[in-house]
Length: 322
Ligand SMILES: NC(=O)c1ccc[n+]([C@@H]2O[C@H](COP(=O)([O-])OP(=O)(O)OC[C@H]3O[C@@H](n4cnc5c(N)ncnc54)[C@H](OP(=O)(O)O)[C@@H]3O)[C@@H](O)[C@H]2O)c1
Image (cartoon, rainbow, N blue to C red; front, side, top):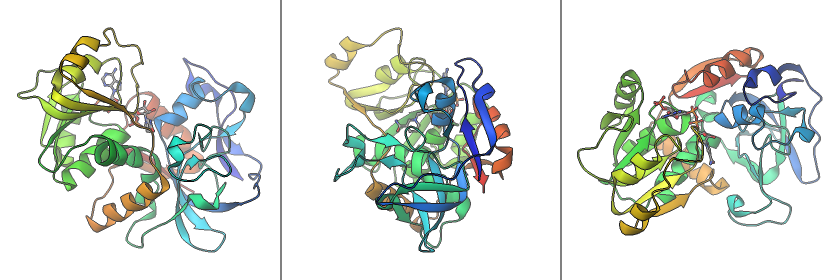
């Protein structure tokens, strides 16, 4: 089958290990099933795998991809939930210490066929397009849990999103504004900030700019570059939810004093559960939300999409048709 895989890894030149070509069909363990993919989407996770982060070299070659939607063996239209729990685990898969994401242990979704546990199939609502369905399982699910499970905010509260253009950031803006939250963003690029406002954000600020008032929650995926600004921007008792560290995980200052003095909550967040993915898909359709798609191209041209992400030129989700 046609698949996009990591053949080797390089911290500085991630595209050097990317292979787009023939790959054996996936093995299907007991209790698993296959999905014939119609669409898949790219995440920063796929670039981290090519850089050698989170994917040990002895597992190569590995088919990349956490986002996908397609047709099950029973002929049903499904989203693929990417969090794979260990055998016998019940409840929230993200809390299983032995969980993995597709493309970490088992081949991922950037392929014609993916094997997944039956439990990981989520019905695709009829009103959701294939293109938008592929956007939801990773970045959108992560933004959904950050906002609605972990940020502890109610409609009318102000939420700051660090970074305006990434997959998680754009999802958070679209979901938060649909739910009645006041969404603010920061960006290194004024044009990206304006694009976020067009998408539903209430205001955009330059990265590091002092805000007119303190916010109730901050959604953090940028990491070292924005950590101090996130802590400084919170009101006493506010919450920073962190799910990524694109610019590095060692900020110049940990801000421990401000965290305890302002009684802030620092909450880690990773992906979401199968049930949250089902609710997310319903929310997106019921509210008429159209996930921002940066570009859509055939899977055979996946390298161009990876190059855009490595160069930081992505606005929204990069989708592949299979
Ligand atoms: N824990 C989880 O479950 C989970 C799930 C999904 C993603 N993630 C992580 O979340 C992060 C974002 O993912 P994504 O797919 O949304 O990636 P992405 O599309 O690459 O987004 C990158 C975002 O980070 C900002 N940014 C990057 N470098 C920056 C810097 N040096 N200073 C300030 N801002 C910077 C950009 O903002 P501007 O260009 O607008 O400034 C952009 O909005 C990644 O690290 C990813 O691994 C984690």
